[in-house]
Length: 464
Image (tube, rainbow, N blue to C red):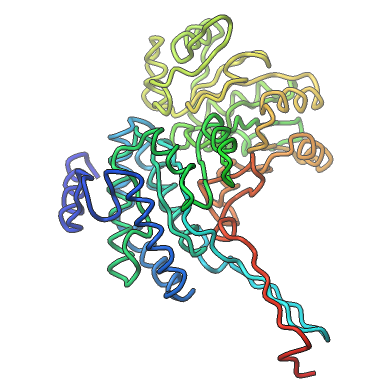
């Protein structure tokens, strides 16, 4: 599909949906977050009291259908508004959350029947959830959170990233319209038209908000954790890859290349740095270059560091203008032309800023290590206690077990790109809210519920 065709599709879909793309009113979008909270509170009470679990299932399926139809449009709008990532990969991410986010099917009932009665425990909603979403996965997180949160019986007030507010508003309006057209309550999902920190503060202060959910950087997650509200936090990661000398290097090279270059490395779970045993390092680098990666020299590496990082008093931070940019553009910034590559490789020491600072760019630092033990030691340092994601390529079960125990990450993949850890090409469900800091792990509808126990005493209902 060429550029003009995609723009025409976007225009046509918006016209058919009759959406207010200026986001000034209607379809769940409000001028003031307090109005959004009040509307969601009313909707949630209606959703909980007057709708059955089967209604949730039916409406979620309608959300999947309309989201699937609009995935190419969402991907195009994200790319145009944020300037980050790759269009085709954004379609894949949207489809992953659409197809593989569990709905009500993960809400299970536990029951115990005995001489003293019948006990059941079920997953009940919290009420209204305040959800903070990122610019790296904007519509993906809204769709994922909507399915999970309303599946659990909740309503949601979103505070989206300002850098993706237009596409998020369009996405939310489409989902909102679908909910209402399928018999659901209006304002089950809402947002403030202009997202800001004041809105976040109002969410955390409102007694009508029972749970805060943050997907994004650790600064935001830590702020929510200090708010006094119950919080589910999905924070940053800096996922290391360990490659020992038993690994299948053909597969290792292709999988690291695939994962680290996917959507220009915007996923927090994507491979960010590779630690490889020295005796196989040359071959791994050669095979990654054969996959399409571009290896730069040590001098070019230091040039690139000055372009894509900011330095102050010896401390490095990412230059945000380069986050999620194509590898070819990153190379052009230091005078190298390679339009076909999706990934830049560089060899660096274990304490280099490219290793220790989460980049969110298609730049893969390679660290040579003399021993497997060194690989593990430096990988744990680079992961920085985020406990998010790590991966390993090996045929040695003892090595994989040791690294898994040392790194303690929420997601640990073996002999595959980390994408499989969220069900993209792998088993298991998909989520964009990976709650490592607060321990819920890969969230689903069950994560946004509270357990309630109901007891019928004196052996009632027993037939034995």
